[in-house]
Length: 129
Image (spheres, rainbow, N blue to C red):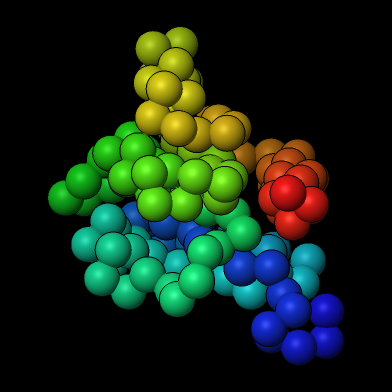
């Protein structure tokens, strides 16, 4: 992964700047190109060109919920894996995440090592299809 064009692109959407920073640093250390957004508006107005290899998406966001964003993005990028990350850990919240189109659901606080393993797994699967 010596050039930016060969790096897998991961989009991270979370309204918590500390979480955005932590995820950006961890993903960049693993060799990913990372695009961040703090809201649905920022994501949808500044969405990167081309299909991302994976999206990490918080649920509780200003303006539009992560559930709605997930549903919208899955219609546009059906093959792009989406991992929801949320403090919401109740079964109905998790089920709604999967119903919205999420491929995985992680609860906060995040186990960063496990999350990075899942990101690697899903990005390698998405490149194989």
